[in-house]
Image (cartoon, rainbow, N blue to C red; front, side, top):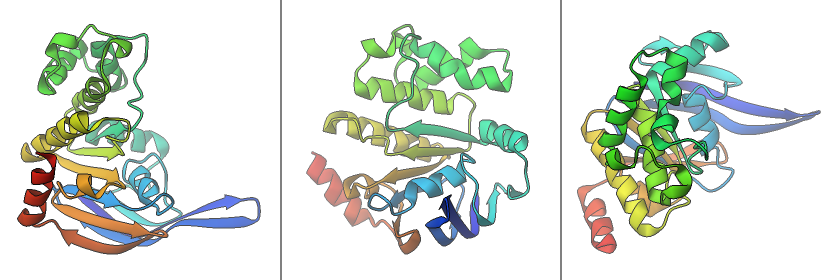
Length: 235
């Protein structure tokens, strides 16, 4: 599904060049559940932004579902992003004065869907919030707000979910609920990439890709034993 070839990203600040990514080559298969792990400044969020067409690489090529995105203009990238990708962020990014179902509807406004309310209610039901559709974010817990955000990410039936520190603002109970939901989506066949600095979160995925100073320093499968140890700690 994802194929990155020698991706670099350099930010220019006046005459100073700051490299964020230094030659990333990476493949992620359809249906994988992957964690991008690294300390602050390692390049993991920059890499996710490039995967989601929120930023463009300085050099290199990116293929999504076989489509070479390197030469696409902004309108084509936005169309591909809205059709293929759902985003989940640490801060939820919900409109505070708008109901849960209206927040979920937002991507459908841009796609021109004619069944916005029906699809949005179905997405909320999918994350276990059918009964909270008319509640505003201020009336929801942090975990519920993040589930609304996940419903919004799912409403266009994307093949890829990109989640940037999705549990960073949650307590341990809500964190476990959200990670369980991502695991469920993975089991349904959706490709899920989670950016995190927490190994407890990463160990529940299938694969951990570690970044440091803009480079991949390791790429390892998660064993069943590692997952079992993590589950014992949670229990």
